[in-house]
Image (tube, rainbow, N blue to C red; front, side, top):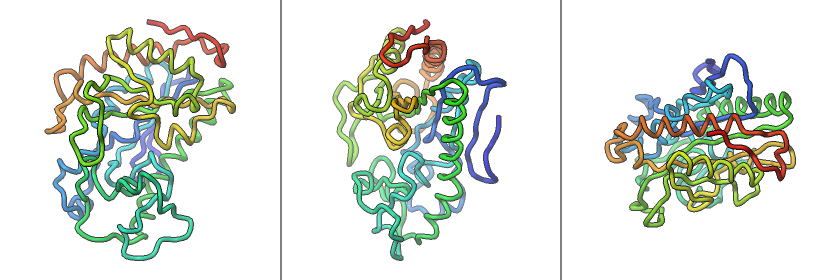
Length: 297
């Protein structure tokens, strides 16, 4: 186990020896809410946690047992979001002009969910007033950049060792769309696999992941309502032997979504995901492109 950088809030759980070409990441499970952040917000600590993928790092914590590293962020998504481009900022949030290199228009910014979010997941405004650009820059330099530097190095090292690498980006999703910005199907699946509509990883990887999830008793959808975020799109490049797959888990399976507490299903889900991790790390990757992958049960 290691952390990267002083106060970066980035932790890498490494196996004694990396034995498989798979990397797991949990960018949104961080729960380190500083007093300064909470005091600067107009929301309660529980309201701020609405944006978390709560406990997902626990669900995937067995990855190192199977020879795969797990990268996790301890800083909260409501503070700075590593599943965005580095400088994706809403100019309405800031009291001073933003530099030219900042992206100020995107669907995520429009929804209030840029690199420094304006709202939490249920649409509530985080701040009573405006921030300075320097505040956003400090968050990005202290937390966002170390997270991606670590992730990029992990992917490069793993690809150099094995000739290719599979990134599994681990998330959770609310069970209903009863908020201001999201509309889900009535019967949301247990798992949504996002491969950017077939462009971020070899389709046989997505098929293998779906087969494994169904084998452990979970219903699966692909790319709807989540096709993959910045991390999946940015790193997934099958032509360069970097495959990225986003997995979203329905929160109703394992937690009380209102109280932000562990639910009775957490132990069961963790066992199911342990089987998923074992299967994804013991597949036959010898002919990845276009080959059928053997998913171990």
